[in-house]
Image (cartoon, rainbow, N blue to C red; front, side):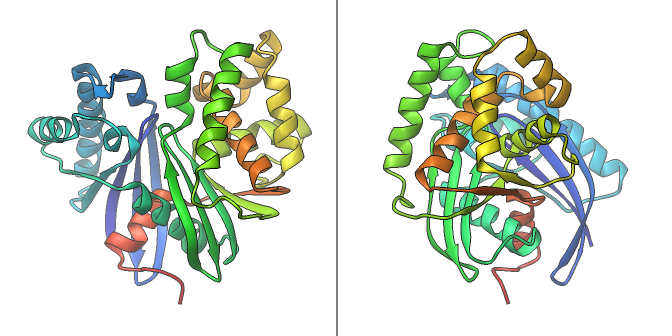
Length: 303
């Protein structure tokens, strides 16, 4: 069977088309739009303009799926609609304009989907720590032998931190300190506090972008998915300069992350330090694959 899954995120809106049968699935196509919905939020309200941007992207995706004769369509939203005060108004408008119903998933469900996607779909180790750094939230999951032992969703992401603290393209020293203070405060109250893991499985755009930059700097194969934590720390230290060389490097490797990569790396580096991580494995699967596995395919865990 074929289906389309749309992830309505705070920074990107992504469409993935899958063919699945039993417990197996294959990704047929990925399409991404950098909608930046977190940038349209003020005082907790997603503006009419932001809702319109979401509608335009979703309508385009719907038309594409119909052209492929795919009628099984699932749309879910994470922090983009979860962490606003006008969620119901946004959902009603999207439904009226596009005819599409959006499911807003909770932070705990998002963490579970990321875990399932990375471990069942992505082949991550059955025991370890997982981090999903998105545009508007960060999910942390500790698990043993395929079972979640603790997890949480923190209201901070690469784009939301940029929108809240950064006045220019790159954060100033003072802005970086403000970002660091919030990140450390959120991690301090995380339910996974006290967990230590030498290996971290990473999900989300920030971690994929960090891996691309690290591979570019080290000369490693761009398909390399295992990154030493020390390389990520060195990358953040280097990018904090915010000079022309920094800008050229980001534009060459991850141009769509030019404004969010530093706030995202601030989260990632704090996670590496807090959990004493030594290596990061970038998972090819994440929240969309987890959603597919659980809500479409009916797979709830490891067998």
